[in-house]
Amino acid sequence: MKRHLALVGFMAAGKSTIGKRLARKLNSAFYDIDDVVVREHGAISDIFYNEGEAAFRRYEKAALADVFENGDSGVIALGGGALTLEDNQKLLKKRAYRIFVKVSPEQALERMRRSKVVRPLLGPTPSLTKIRELYTKRMPQYAHADYVVEVDGMTTSQAVDDIIEWLHKKKIHL
Image 1 (cartoon, helix red, strand yellow):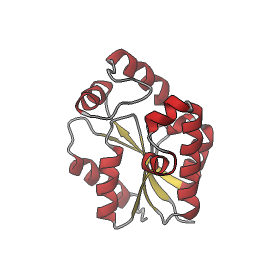
Image 2: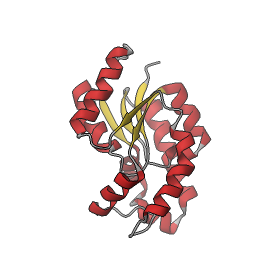
Image 3: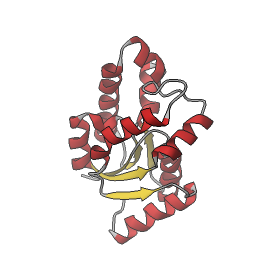
Image 4: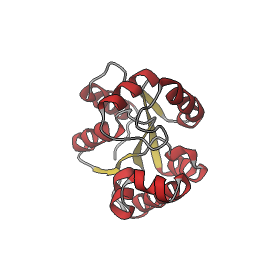
């Protein structure tokens, strides 16, 4: 069974951006779990508003399971809260190398302020206090990663190169 490379981490860490470029460089498939959910169920903010976070997490879990079941091995970008479900944690541990794309709460806030995307759990005007609170709550789940790339002050290319260097060092091929 081939393993995937799963990028995990907080909102606005750059998982999707890094993941796309990493997949291109590795000549492998790329899956953005949020995009899969949006394609199948509509906008994330609408799901949160109309059906609640639990429904979104179910859709996210199903999308991840589908990628593992039917997709070619490749790079997967997960939403910031994907690891809040124990089932996702177990599946990732068994089927993927987990890369924690680590961004500081301050940097995450900066990126969110520049983004047009509203994060349903933080609202239209996220505060550093709210971000730190959620970040601290999720950190234990991110901490189980196989590798950590600290992206504060890094360009996307530098983050991708850092991950590729780790893959080569560990002799991991997708």
